[in-house]
Length: 421
Image (cartoon, rainbow, N blue to C red):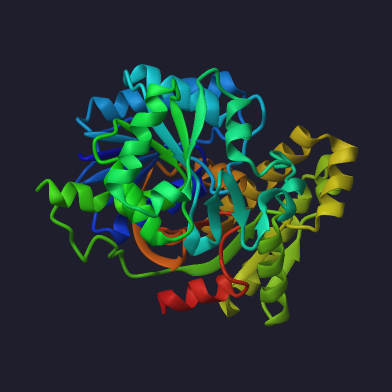
């Protein structure tokens, strides 16, 4: 095993694994720390945790447990993956987890780079952009759990860690590997231990990938991963294969479960409905009032409709509606109620014969995957940047697409099923 990865949510894990597969690495995503040995030839493992919004101490403990498992499998390099929108709060969790992993690996310097230009996430002069606007003007300032109100990543990360944070800006990145490494040395001499790195294109990420070839720990979004497979190939450790993304043939009925309230997912839900897709919304207030049949009624509606084509069951809503629900129920309780309901819906859909399932939203994906008892996923072909199809590893065959709320084109749902034929 060459590369051991720790991801702080399930959709982010598939996002990272997708980029490794595109680089020819045979990659498996595990749901939590594996309890059994992995079967087959594997170049990279992504341990998916549901730790992004946990208390920092819990996120650190889970991440260290994942690191210990990966170290015992002989991984040569380690990767901590978080969202390309750097989702976090002043209390963590990116800073505390990075610091703990560095200490466990005796690593005195690492990078932090959430850039993913293919999904319009770029970093310039240390500021994170989503598309053409700063992160805090992109809609992420309204995120229900981790509102991002500052686009300056040096400032954001410094608030979360006792380690000194610095910047490798585009002046150095654009000049290539040796100039980047020279800047690393300058920062280390100045006492910097974590460096935010600018990147505005895939070429920048490839340069950065070459520069971190001997770094014990790399942290970032999934974008930096595109430059890592080549390092292993150059060292004679990896024979890239064009069959790394091959999955079993699709079978079963088709469905979508959406809990994300991001701008992108709101658009995807609307696009699916406009195109004539069968859809039903769950009412969070009814669920909170103890109306358990709300989820069951959605399943009763879905069962006869599934034979005609994909169905969508969702709690996705505009920011003002989400805020109103949170004010009534509280942020944490609202999220937990919705996650439990969507997990129940997903279990019911699979029991009804669904074998091709799209889950929209990181927290929703985590709840659903755990509810289905899935322990590992084989990574397949990319649907849109950052979102591949995956296949469950084990006796019950399900094809899953775990979509980060912010990712995917407006027609993502129909496009994903069309790809399967």
